[in-house]
Amino acid sequence: MSEFDRSRWTESEFAQEYREFADGYVPERHRLVEITRSLYRHFLKGSRPRRVLDLGCGDGLFVAALQKTDAGLDATLVDGSAEMLEAARQRLAGVERTRFVLASFQELLAGDPLETTFDFALSSLAIHHLRLSEKEALYEYVFSHLDPGGVFVNIDVVLSPTPALEDWYLGLWREWIAGQRESPAKAHLLTVPQRYKDNPDNIPDTLLAQLQALERVGFQSVDCYYKYGVFAMFGGTK
Image (cartoon, rainbow, N blue to C red; front, side, top):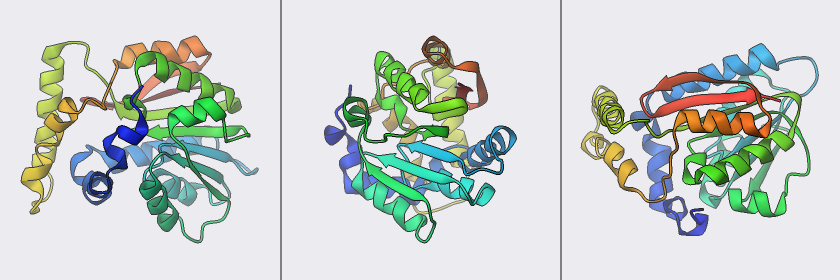
């Protein structure tokens, strides 16, 4: 497992770049947020307060969007980066029933600081830093922290099943970035797909391997909800 304290997410400059430019290099980012809100509304929104877990919450974008769907939800946001967690605190300032937990995935699995169960768990662009066996251990952890009927969704980069597909998908990613509005950072952002491939912290696995891992730990109705090149949104229910 890539040790979090040695990864690039501990670098302030790297975290700041993500917060500032993610909309310009994460394809369909806000569409993924809206699909997550739709999934939540369809399966979970109801009269009682819902408990939401965001693993690797970053700057809190997804929880802020879910709050617009269900203002009564109770959210726990977990991230291994103190800087990202502070950005999430700022985005959700004034929002009640939010809890912020500074912990890496390793620390979650080792010490379990959450001590509760949830109706909805999500993760965005975080779990690909784990090897497949470690991903499966985290999926099992999530499964054990969901109430019956609870939903888990993972939005992440995945490994293509063939090199030819990988080349096409990375090209598709560069084309998407090139199609965004012009900015002084455009040339720099166009290097993101190759930097993603070259970064040893990234350990993506195929979508199929991860769907099978979800099924092995007990998730039902496992499926891919959306896919754009190497970016996939998938999950299941307990």
